[in-house]
Amino acid sequence: MPQTAFILIVTPDHDRGQRLREALRERHGHSTNLVESLDDAVASIRDKAPDLVVADAVVRGESSLAVIGGLLDGVAHDATLVTLVNGDAAPGQTGLAPRVTVESLAIPADTEFGRLVARISDAATKAVVRRESRLLKESLEGQQVEPFEGIIGVSPAIRKIIERIKKAARNKLTVLILGETGTGKELIAEAIHKHSDRARRPFKPLNCAGLNENLLESELFGHVKGAFTGAVSDKKGYFVAADGGTLFLDEIGDMPLAMQAKLLRALDRREITPVGSTEVRRVDVRVVAATNVDLARKVDDKAFREDLYFRLRQWVIDVPPLRERRQDIPLLAHHLLRRANLLHNVNVDGFSSEAMAALAKFHWPGNIRELVSVVEAASVEAGEGRVELEHLPEPLRGSRELLHPASAAMVGFTISQMERLMIERALQSTGGNREQAAKMLGIGTRTLYRKIKEYGL
Image 1 (tube, rainbow, N blue to C red):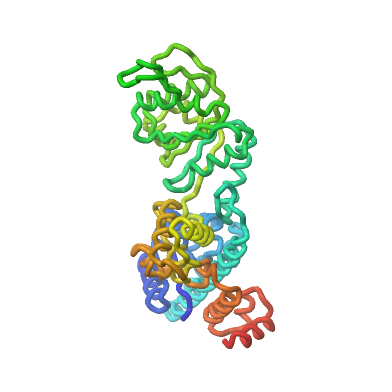
Image 2: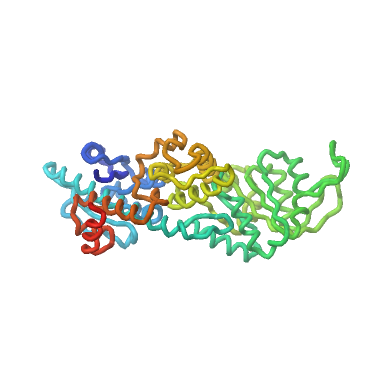
């Protein structure tokens, strides 16, 4: 069966959009989403990257190519954008979206509607094959990539983060790491410390969440004996403990307002005063902060000091959620599986294609931390052999139909097994046309004929 795709339809003509949606879904099995404005289209693409977008060339006075093409180029450059134009089809202005395939189709008469649907379906299927071929190639290449201080991935986003870490290690700026819970912000902070000239000095992490002003002040700056009830001895705080090294303040967005002023003073003056003391102590500490909240919005809401915000964000590292770098999931999953084998005394050597497809397509609200838990539990469920779909939690098992086995899910298969499957997929998507399949796969026609004979296809 040909592969199915996720298609976004963008048109203010609701009747035509609904007709396209039903035809693509019922005749060809594609999943679809219909929106009537470019703002809704942008929101839909950011929520779930489509394989193909079919849009009116102009939507309420705006060029869909300029808006949608540019966005796809950044988040889903394997996708195809089909613009519907009145009259003869105009050539796609591919310069606006250099990595996105752009086609223009004329809005047909009713008698030719079925032909339009077939052409859109064909373009969508080719986009899926193109995406899966890239994911497969990158996953195979990714197996040879060495982790950088525990940071694993081959996606452009991870490469950019590693480059930002290396630059941060060479400078002395205060660093602010932004990202959802579970994305590995502390790992990034440690990597900055390990590659800096402070690597031989302490790295001290402190989570600011849930600490009131008094407790947090004591934790950061220390206190002297008798400073408050229960202070039975002197205590040095995290600034002193990290002197010469790096202090990592996690969940900085939860810091009480009054405490924010004291932190800003410590950063600016490089000195602290323990609670209950009048003695000022000089400290040499580099601060790396992190948060999973929108600090700019908290500043607007007067819940976070603007001066501290600007002081912290001298060097920003923005960590994307796992769902925005899905090509890293197979590599991460296999790394975590090897670790789980050692931790839990099991002997699992990989994932079935269906299990990996489910992992690769799941939304991962808990990001890498959730992936760690799922892989460890699945390895214990399996015990030996492979992790199968049945070993995964129910929410993941429901995602298996969203990705086909010819994608990054095939990591762990032999090269010949993957090659055969990719050829099968290409032949299916071209209706058995070997010349088109060879072009899609990027190989010569003679090579394809030889491979077909070799694999008995």
